[in-house]
Structures are given as structure tokens and as C-alpha cells.
Image 1: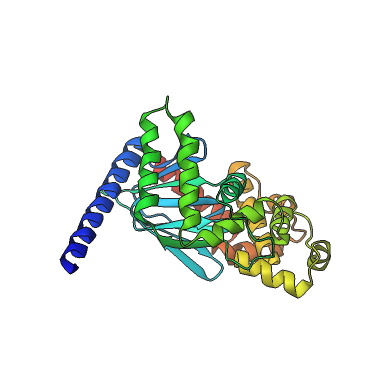
Image 2: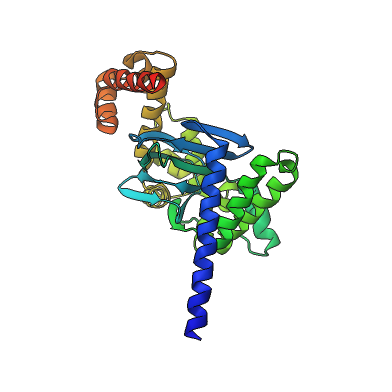
Length: 315
């Protein structure tokens, strides 16, 4: 019996390794340059030939799978590292910090991200006769888990569609539904049920996040927002931080500062103008908070980022 189990384990390990090698080959062929592409609706591919500095962005609900290399997301004080053996799941829009850790020209970082539709998650839950809880949830909206054979197999079949554009419109929704089902049946099933609840707007935290994303430039009155959501201020803080790892004010600040950075880079605004556009009335206050998050004052940071972009373009 022990010998048979050992042989089965070896066969399963060989199958997993074959899946991983095929995923590297297919993603690497689909994106041959550093950067990102979206070859199919909801599917994003990434390639980097060198480790990257921290990238500040808002991550939407999605499942992220690494074919080669490794990456880390930082949210609050928590670190979430994933690689070819682990996947990352995000269930609400989060202002997170991402960093590619392992990458080289010989073995570039290769990954894919599949956006998750809350409506699809809810539909599959209903078909599985498993409705999401409507109680306010304290489930953290991001985590890493082991990438098992079923989910990896579906991921490989998803990338096969990149070579079959005629089949993609028919098979893509089917494979996406399978991946959602595999996630629901896996160890992050509770977290994905959380996404279905958020997508329906049933959660006060979902409504709070949506409000903050739409009105991040407006003054935040936590007491008024909590009252509108039917929660106490302390309860609102507790549940919001449990889901996002940030307080409402920290969440808003991240959104403001990341948008200000984008405005200075893409629209060539000066620091004072960008600060005003995102809701700051005091330029000195903006400069202090910007330096606290990004490590350097606004204009110095923007100049450094532009130099990095120019250096990359010259290579």
C-alpha cells in the first residue's frame, strides 16, 4: 500500500511539473516583451526580465497565477508572496503595493491575472446550491494558497485559447466558470463567497469601498458614513480594516496619493495642482504624506520614475 501511494505521489508530481512547464512555454510565447497585454477579455499577461521596484496600484477582484519567478503584494503590514506553487486571490478593489522579486533575462517573470466577475461567482454559487452569507464579513480580501492540480490544469487550458482565437469566444466563459468553481471548492472558498456578497452590494463594507473609490477627493466623515451604512463607528472601523487591512482614512489616503502620482506622471501636473485635484487643501500636508508613502518628495519621485522609463526604453 505504501509503495502504491508513493508511486501515485510521484505520478502526480510529474503531472504538476508538466503543467507548470507548459504554462511557462505558453505565457512566454504569448508575451515576448517586458510589460503586459490583455489578449482575451479579463485575462492579463505579464513579463519582466528584471526584478522591479515597488509598484503602487489599485488591484481589482482577480486570481493571479505565476508561471515563472515570484511576486509579492504588501497590504498594510501584511506580505503576500506567490510563485508557481501558489496563487493570489483578491476579492475587493485594494490599493496594494506589488513587487516582482525573482526575474532575469534567462528566466523572466511570467504571470497571468484573471479578473473575477461577482455576478459569475454568485451564479455558480446558486447552481451549486450554496448561497453566500449576507452578514457583514470580516474575511480579509486577499490571501495566497497552494495552486492545486485542478486549478493549474484549468489555467493551462485557459492559456491554450491564446492559440485558438476561433474557439476562445465559446470556451473562455466555460473555463472561467470552471476556475471560479475550483476556487469556491478550494481553501479560499469562503473568501470568494465574500466576493459574491460584495458584488451584490449586500455588505456595508462593499458600499463603503465603492463610495471611497468614487469620492476619494471629498472630505471623509467617518461618523456620517458609518451612520449611513447602519453601523457604529467602532464596528465600521473594525470590519473595514478586517477586509482591507487599512482604516477608512488610510484607504482614502492611498487612493488620493496614487492618483496624484498618476496625474503628475501622465498629465505633467506640478505637486500643488495634483494635490488640489485629489482633495488636499494644504500642499505641505500633501508633501509630507506623499513622502511617507513613496519615500521621497513628489517631484523628485516623478523625476526618478521618468528616468527609469527612459532608461528602460533605451535598453
